[in-house]
Image (cartoon, rainbow, N blue to C red; front, side):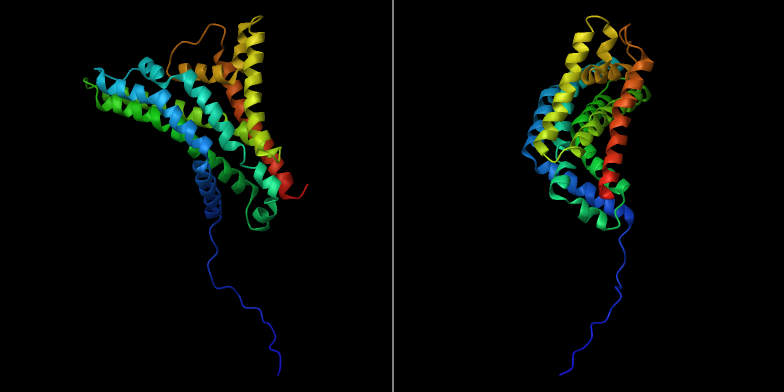
Length: 273
């Protein structure tokens, strides 16, 4: 009996779009994050401790229109900054560290997956989880307050809703790049989580110690800088020792520098270095 030679048969299917691969990574991160017990606990606790009472208060208390100072108070900036910090440490801890540990980069980049797609997919999934706590509840409170107001100045209230969305977006994004950077430089999920939280905690302590000599040092505390940012977004006056330029510079550097380091780290891994 003769042997039939194996012949090449061209694949007749359609290639998936490049953006779809990014979406698959994003969806995987989002689903995996919501299965985490720690993430669930922080989301539930954060909502009830920070926003639940404020939502009820807005509905029951009469108000003519939504005011910036009232919404800033409802945002509970300090509590939100703390919970966002804890949630970011948990959410980002295994985003890249598990891929390093399991050598999954070989699988990712053996396909037509770009470093940009990988980073955006991982970051996007984390940001969606963060937004469940940091953006959705504040915007919901602002919308409910506008719908239940007794006055007719809805344009003013809409402006406050916009400011609330900006504040929520900042809280959503603020801690994520640093957390992902920590995850990119270790193979242990626990090291990444503890390292992220301890880094933030050390900055808070350093800011507290050096502020005894010059109060401007408080700006390097991630928690306090985020709270100052909320005040600035809502148009409230900052402390005299806080410069708007210095605050914006710190926010930008705190977000962009870790993001750039993460991108370079992933690029080196993708080429096998």
